[in-house]
Image (cartoon, rainbow, N blue to C red; front, side, top):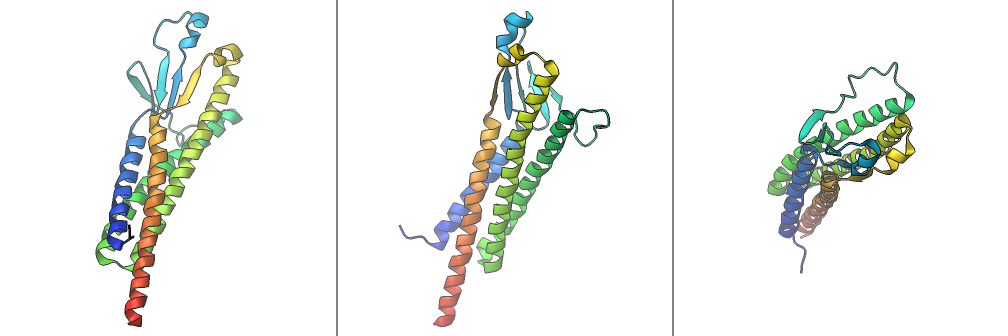
Length: 210
């Protein structure tokens, strides 16, 4: 199958829509990190719901959600080093992930214009924007994973009960998987726009040669 400018344009539009949709879904849902403490029922004599899940902005248990502490308004003077590290990591990913969404929005607007005008510079800039968006999302997700590990270590040291922590079942949720899908779609979109820029440049050089 021959690769044409129209086919690459359709591919770029589809992947751009996917990247935006999955990133919005990831940011808006609360299943980034899931904890199942059912194994603690015998140790703690607790018979309630011991399952919880958290997103970027709030944590939920028993259909009740409460906001996560704002990392930019917390006073760190009397905090331990581990707690400060958790807050710094939290502040980093709550900035990077919305920033990547903003980059995607601007990239989408530039992409629509570049496809209609077939302007080399605009196509190239759109491709670079989407690659930057993919990088910002990747950094945000990586920092979130580091944040989750640091939070678990902080809670473990605070509890000081190893047998309790061993009975916790902790895993990442589907919201994080959505973010990974968005990263892949952003990367493909950026490469598609750069390929379109290359094809437009080659076509113009050929037209000038003729």
